[in-house]
Length: 276
Image 1 (cartoon, rainbow, N blue to C red):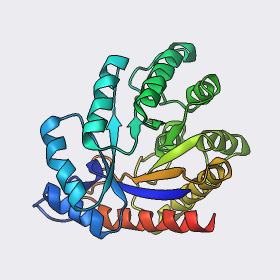
Image 2: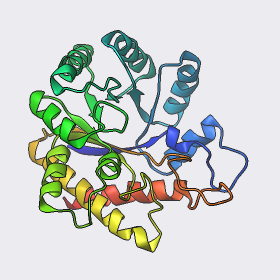
Image 3: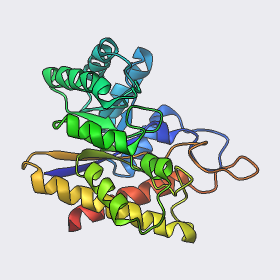
């Protein structure tokens, strides 16, 4: 089994830090390759963007995954074709419908899982605000209702959404999070606090949050290794978003160098994986 660490292409928006001139597409991908990421995750639906990205990903030997936002199975059919055209290793899906009842979400999830499997793709359902998986309790019930459903854990959204007291978390809330993490076959990585979805990881007062996330990722890696086959892959996408995910000062500038933090998180999760 292997860990593959990707960088989010969206997370490369508005870089480099402190510059008015953003890196070009090729500069971003070159930087990602130079930093020893295994791949890049990006939205593959727009044909012109995809046709520009694919040869550059090949040039820099970067794997890629498609991140998708379908409202219906019909839309997901197009997402699958875009994944094929973009050479995606897997598909990460944010489930857009937000039913009030879990039973009303099951048919959507199962149908998309079946479509991905028929096309030969691993499908990961992302935990994310303003999506079907916005609520931790709803998501816990959803994974019980769909035992084969595999999550991509963007754990920042549950921490902000629930505003857990701590750390340390209560035993009950930690147990709930471990249920979620135990169903993850992939992760999106950033560090949140109770109130902010993405905090600078090198500020001393944020170390408690970095330590919490490191412990959750370690638990997830251990659970994955315990059940995985020899050729299975855990994908971790470092996804430090630009403003307004990234915190800004009064001048509108980001408070920290997001690219340096992305590299730090990449190195951290590889270290965690090796010691699990």
